[in-house]
Length: 430
Image (cartoon, rainbow, N blue to C red):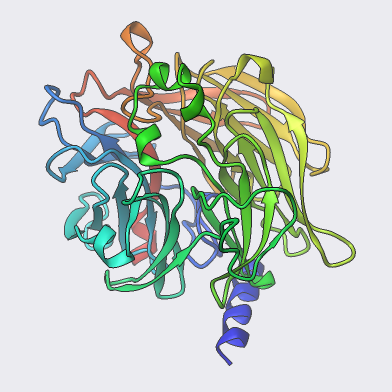
């Protein structure tokens, strides 16, 4: 009965035009109808800059507002925790934001006063409760639940990790360890690897599946990037797999070889599009994970991103709501690329723009008319000197060209390193 209800909710979410917000978010959420009012930016603190703490920064994104394009609020969490990713609960009342270093999770009330989020809870026993998971990364909404992907573990601080489930009010539910060669947990290896690494998580409810991707452990992501790249052994300690899970039972089913650290996962929205995309950071390729004609799932590299030999380091992707185009940001050259994915097996680059000396996250509005970029990757991986630009930049997209709307210099504003962006709107709570 529970499985039937879950699948029904998934089908309903996929069918309704109000089933999602900015395209990376969970299909279980209410959607912002029209113009977003705010951009919430989960920001890394910098020692000696402002209060030095990680913080949630609110930017006014409504062009009819007197403070359009300005920072209107910030709330510090005290200390530096390697602020990274964040996600709303399914009712969109709360924003969960994780720290990759201290493994703390900060929960903000964003519905009482959307312009001024309030820190209402800190989960500081994530490692203990989860049985040793380190580095909460993606916080992803399921009905009444938050599913959190880890990056590491407290035994060797390498890449073996797990998914962790919580209730919306912050109570621990369960831990689901990634399958490994010595413990496949009933999963089937399609390729050679079962490395147990984690990174992102996304769901296709109508097919009752989840997908996870893989990155690297704490001992790598908290290390200086230049030093890390000179360490041949450390560079072998990156994920090369994606795992397909049973969504209802939370059990791994298939393990795909996807070499080169597959990062963000973005699934198609149309109900007849049974596929998701990812990009590989170290090999600079777009991969397609799809359900084939014979009812079997496959993973296939379908396009290069720039010149892979130059390691452009693709870091984020964003799929348009009609599944026709895919934005890809590449950190090393500070560029945004747009691919035509109307044929998902043959993506073609159709546009490119230099955003800055470095660029990381990309978020676009559901109507596709506005695209936002932030700069910071990781505190010890960001560029140094004059290339250490820290910004949020907003653009209008008319289908042909990105036109600047506003930009905020986070160093000048003494805020820190902006990482992930989420949207807010008054209309959600009226």
